[in-house]
Image 1 (cartoon, rainbow, N blue to C red):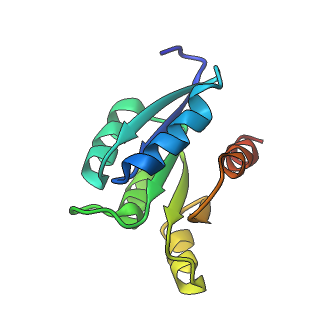
Image 2 (image 1 turned 90 degrees about the horizontal axis):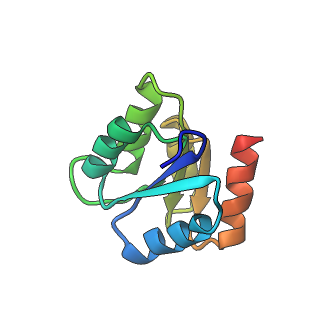
Length: 124
């Protein structure tokens, strides 16, 4: 891990989604990629790593779902972009994500190019 690399944390209970996001950015040398399988693990990894961007699934098992994780990240002292990912795409769902503090709420499915565009937008 290099100090000048940007850290991306992927928090999703779906292995395929984690793999898709991870593979999208692992080939880019400017990123270090980390993963967590649920909200609790994601919160612990966030506290440990202080990532620059978190991709978090909205619906995850356990005490902390993606909305709660987003709120906790945004309430922390560490500045971080949060991209919420969800299969729920109604306007009310999107509004809840934005109210939780998400920088971007992305409805599944999505392509690797969309993820790259999101990161480029956040880092611009």
